[in-house]
Structure formats: structure tokens, C-alpha cells
Length: 313
Image 1: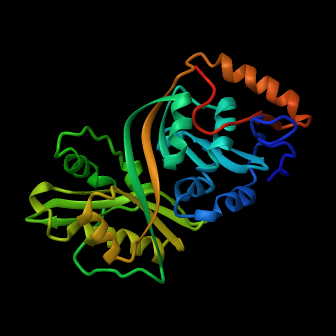
Image 2: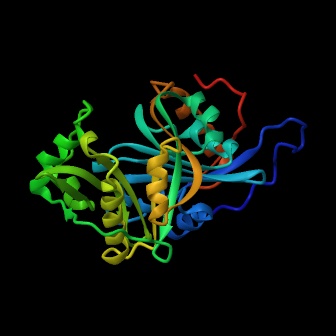
Image 3: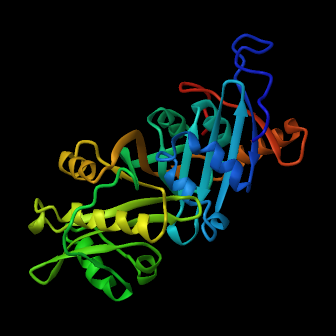
């Protein structure tokens, strides 16, 4: 990562905004190191260091004496997603230059990032969630009959996910590229767990899409299928860390995951994002100025601030 800046919020002039050196990078080792302080929090972005996903993502790192940050904009077959980590002022500096596409999904941000994100995006469907994670050493599997799903199960899977009226469109490719296990009751698909992303080379996977038909809830099926997915990620894919995201108010789900060995971690925010600067002239102008201030190819210099500051509309 780039060396820290010498000018900070208490630089030559009192009240000066902290400045950051911002670099776009495709250095997997540097990015892994930058996100390793809390690998469970960063699991989704770490998984995008995997070949095939990495080519569909853009990463920036920001360094300043007052803090650092990482920003990812990802696309491709998994859909558009944004990941943010680090100091809110560093995130502000990066988003002022690189707000990304007009619409995207906030896959991971910390609660303290929310005021910064609201400067650049209109948020909808905001979820206050919590990360949980488990290692192979801490994993306690549960027994029970399960079956791994494949392409031919696509229709049944979509029917289950749409039980409560939400539209679904999972493809056979999604199922084959991920890890999905199911439990059947009375001859019908009753519960399923899958993955958002799997990265054996980065050593991380993210479990998700856990759903049980309302008629079969309370019987431990979600715990059983989540256990099967987690075991497969450890045994077959060799991922040292498996993470998931849970609503902390969903006590049955939290208890089920804890019985499997998952431990509570950082609070995270998810939301649908729509950029406020629709045309993008502001970021384009700021990028031009930041590159001139960077004094080196590929380096940008920009200021950032914590909540309550500049108008970015």
C-alpha cells in the first residue's frame, strides 16, 4: 500500500481536512493484507480476489496519517456490489472520486460508514446485520439427511424461495458454481442453504440464501443444511474461514449458527444504492484534480471528512 500522507486534519492550517493517497490496485497480496484485520467482515471482498471474480472487480486503497480504507466495486455474473472498509474519512475521499455505477448493492459497510454513503447515494432497503464466522477447528456439525442441489433442481429451488411472495431467479449456473444443500420433508424441498461466494485461493467463503418453508420451520432444518454447506466448504474446498450475515434480532437463527460454532463478529450494513450524482460530472472533475495533485502515475490525492460535511450532490 502507498506510504502515509504527511498532511493531516491538523496540518499547516487548523481545521484542514485530512488528505489521502488513493491508488487503484490489482495487487492481490496487498489487498489481502489491507483487509486482513477482520477477515470475517471483509469476507465478501476477500473472496473477489479469486480468479474469475477478481477480473470483474475494481479495488482502491486510501492511505493517510489519520487512517486508511479499502473500496471495491464489483460486477459480473454475481451482480453489482460495493464493499467499504476502514476510516470513514478515507471512504469519503475514495467515493468522491469513484462512486461507481448508477445503481449497485451495498454488500458490506460498517455502521459508521452510513453518513458518508448517504452523501453519495440514495439508500433503500437498508438492513442492519451482523457478521458471524467459523473456522474448521471451531465447527460443530450436526447430523441429518441432506442432498446437494444441482442444475436440475433450479425450478424447485426457485419455487421454495418464492414461497413468501418474493420474486426469485436463480439459475442452474448459480447452483453449480456455488454450494447448495437441501433437506426434504414429505417428499418436497423444505429447506436450503447455499453460498454467496466461494474462494479457495483466498481461503474464505460466504454462506447465504438460507431459507426454510414456513410449514417446516422450528424443526432444525436450516441448521442441518447450513451445517452441510459449511462442512463442504471446509472439507472439499479447503476454506479456512466461513462467514455469513444474520439479522441479530433473529434469535433462532443466531442460536442455530452458534450451535454450529459460528461466532458473532462486526455489525454490518447492507442496502440498495442509487448514486446521487447521476451524470457524474462532479466525480470526473475531482478525479482530474486528484490526479494532478498525486504527482505520480496511478496516484490520486483527495481530502475526506467524517460525517456532517460537504455537499456532493
